Image (cartoon, rainbow, N blue to C red; front, side, top):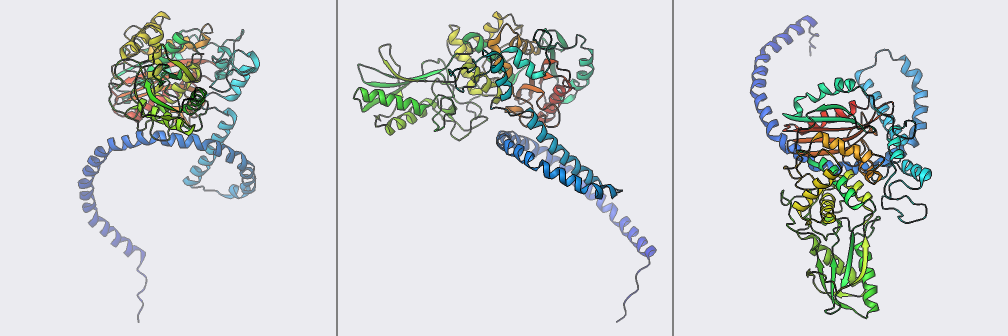
Length: 571
């Protein structure tokens, strides 16, 4: 057999060129045909992908929060081995004269992971509300009258009172204090702020209506303004207003109490809702009011009366009006009722969207009946009723202090808590505890504080109602009010803000920028992206900011742009 000689290189090259010229028109035609189809397919799937991303974000955030301690421990454990590996491979790396792009990328990724672990180690540990535990402990050690309770050990000797002290909290944010213990003031000239923010806020991703405000948290002086007095839809940044109003009307020590009352003349046992959506039926109460504990106490009181069987009812009359929010049935909010357990969630979640009970009060009462049975008390199927003035209270359980509830509401953007606190504000103000009464009470309370409420419209406490209107100037004024040394009861508004890169709705954001330096409340509805909070500059200045964007068309790009704007204040 004759083996053909290898084809000369030049001949092969010419044949390859001819083949390429013959195929090129077909490839061009195919590209022109397929590209429009791909474009149409991308446009049609983009909304679905966005919905999937929004739906999975809370789960991803919970996974990230759950694994963060493990990652930190791994980083600490492997740091010596990594250092030894670097020393051992140094000579070989030096001999490489032409590194590839992927080598740079791998090196950068490794360095980034090491840096991230270092940041977590240096800044942490963080508790579930976004406050450094060391920060809280320092406040307690220095003053013994400040620091956030967070529902832990309230009433114990030496334990902090619910309202944190202003100086320590703000100093911990920036790390620098001015003479006299106050936070170091921001520069008087806002030109530098405008030079940075103007080009960012001109981004088309922010839609057709946008507003911004930046103030010095210590002096209240405005450093930047863009349509700051124009009312726009605030989404969940409304919760900042709800928090300030609730703390002002009720005080940081206020607790929400659920009780069991016995009607002496009829023997009816009434479970009376106290408007505490954090009341829990779970075995591990984690410092919250426990429905199991209430049942145990109630059963003991009934046994003392030699009662083993009761007619069970439940009372939700603390609230008035409609239970359904204008958005209708929605996984972001349960029906608003004075009695529910675990925010009427039907899964194991503690925050974010979740399937809800259709009748939260009935579900809580049935769970209560089940716990009574475990203690030898048989209860009838529950039904709605109202406890009379003649009833005897057998047992009570109370929520953590309002300061802790406000922090939880802001950190997790908890809609159920927001609506509850708005109603309690209404009740404390002498108004009906319904949507209208709560909305009016919040606005009136802020007006009495002297805040710029002109143009503001509140229709709920959570910000889910698109009819809500707030100005950027009002949001920064609320934050400045919470930083005022004369109003320590409002400090949970600052300590409860999600911490960039660490907690709540900012846990998965700012991982490559201002992690730990920005604390902010997020707000997102279709066509609405907002952000309001505090930012710490390199030299220790603490600034309050509010950015509102309405009629946005790309929520992810708009969110990214607002994050860039907040990050710019930290550099």
